[in-house]
Image 1: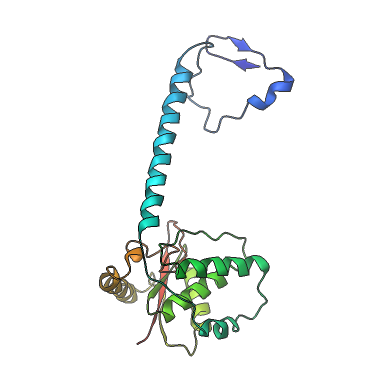
Image 2: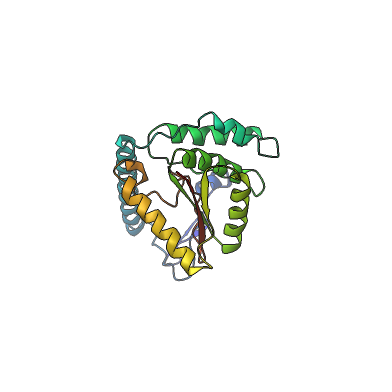
Length: 230
C-alpha cells in the first residue's frame, strides 16, 4: 500500500511488487505528492534531462581523451628480471591486471583504469610493475596514499624492490616539510619539462595514468616518488 499526500492510498498487487523500490535518501522532510498530481512527473522529467546532460559530458570527455596522444612506455627486457623479485606466485586475475595496465602504458593514450581488489589480493604488485616500466622509461612516478602509515609501508616496499636499480626514491612527504617541498618541486619541475612531450601526463599526476600512481582521497594524505637516475 502506498500513501500519498492528503491520505490517498494506492494498493499494489503482490505479483507487481517489483515495481516498488526503497527511497534512496533520507525520509525526514520529504514532501509527499498527491495521487494523480503532476509534481512527480515534472521532477522525473528534470532528472532525466540532467542524466542526459551528464551522459553527454561523459561522452565528450571520453572522446577528447581518445583523441589525445601520450608517451609510449614499453616494458623492456628487464621487466622479467624485475618480476622475478616478487616472492609469491601471481594469481590469474593479478596477471591479467598487470597485462592490462602495461598494455595501457604502451598504448600511447591517457590511461583511464581503476584496479580493484580486497586487501592482500596483490594490487600493490600491479602498481610496482607499472612503476618499474615508467621509471625505467625516464619518467617520474608518484604514489599517493590515504595515510602517512601506508605511505611509509609502501615506500619501504618500493625501496626494497627497486634495490640495485638506477632509480632515486624520495620518502613520504607529509611528516617532513623539507622533504615535502623537495618532492613537490621535483614533481613540478618534471611536469613542466615534459608536459609538451607527454600530453597525457598533463594533470595526471596522482592517478593511475602515465605517472603510474595509485590515489585515494581522505582527510590525511602522504606521498612518495620514484624516478630514474640519469
